Length: 245
Image 1 (cartoon, rainbow, N blue to C red):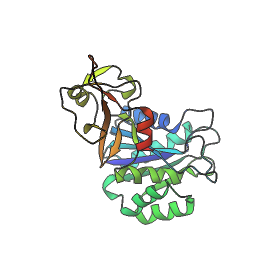
Image 2 (image 1 turned 135 degrees about the horizontal axis):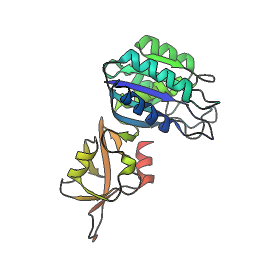
Image 3 (image 1 turned 90 degrees about the vertical axis):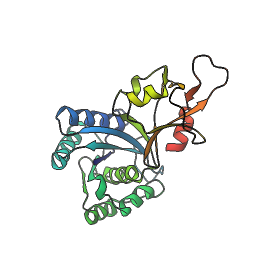
């Protein structure tokens, strides 16, 4: 498994980094360089000293692939051509099993500290991780390295794309067993952590974003009373953001 982290690909008028990550994932699959298992969004530190575009989030693609060098070349070319004017795009690529504790710590620090390019490059060199910037001042290398650390850490972020059906297209009611067949998730639980039975019906609303917790991809739901059409619904956007940012 290979993790690809990207950050700071946008400007205030362009589509965001999550959109670019989904574009890159589509190209990887079309070129038969791997299959995308998930794309996750990771919130980084809000601070006026950090020149982020809007939300200061980075993205991580989890790719099942044996084409490490080809993925680097493709991702670099993509960022050079697709990153918005004025962006500071950065790229980080690593084998999942090679991402060490120092990189996990870097990801956690990036949520609460102002970090530097110099630190990022030194850590990547020491950890044998590919790291490079492609546009602007290249500050995106900081967040791209954080993205792969946070994804490997397994307790941060939410999925903006999953293997299977496009989560943006899922609307209405589904049984738990149907959702397991449609998208690459590990569990469906309520806010207390209780697993929902396979025959229960869930309304997914119009904003389905499974979270990452304990290295698993989870849908969080709330139980309803006296509803004839479904027994659960996906927890609110505000709640999901509060536990995944």
